[in-house]
Amino acid sequence: MPKFLALFLFSVSLSFSLCFPAEASVNEWETQQQNLEQQKTELKDQIKELDEKINAFPDEEKEDREAVINKKLKLGREYSRKANYEEAYKRAIEMATGQTIGENTGTEQRSFIPASLLPGEEAPAQYIPIYKAAGEQYGVDWYVLASIHKIETSYSSIRYMISSVGAQGHMQFMPSTFSAYGVDGDGDGKRSPWDLKDAIFSAANYLSKNRYSTDPRGAIWHYNHAEWYVNKVLRTAGQIKKGSI
Image (cartoon, rainbow, N blue to C red; front, side):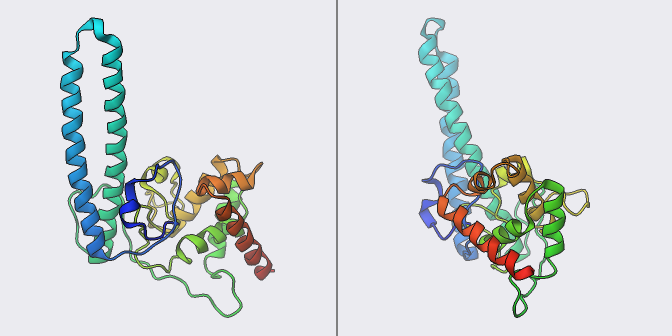
């Protein structure tokens, strides 16, 4: 989902949602990754200072101590969010350059050649069986999965498939979201947003967990919190469904 947002990266609040697809140069990613590393270091220093302050509080100042603890927890959540973004940039740089950056944490990049749309096709024919299998397993309309795939990464044809806010892979999952909802779609014992089947099955699982069966619009809204996005997904899904008949 995400478009280029450059320095907007951390000014928006992030829920378990996905963002708009976008491309960025490797140099930009490296700069962002380095900035995130610096920001993480600063946060660690702040958290350490708060730890020392918490330990120094006398028992009679319980309320003040709890306020500092809450501040520490807030900084901890921000640190985790930045760490997720940094990991996404690292993995994207690895995919683009073929070089390994630090320890591999399991986000596996794989070479991928996207399918081409043939004249008259609304969705690549070779992907349709995957949409249908995932949709059947999780109770989601296959053409909605195809629509999201098209809107997110133009059927995986967008170069690198990494957004400026850290969403990654074929269906543009944030690392934290994929950690919670990602599934092994191809049965190889691994889960990866860079594996096409894993990504599509995970999107179906995410929609299912957000009550797609009873409220399709609400489930799609959870994918990206915007009514215009819901409308676009449903409109595109209708075109795909009609084109496949």
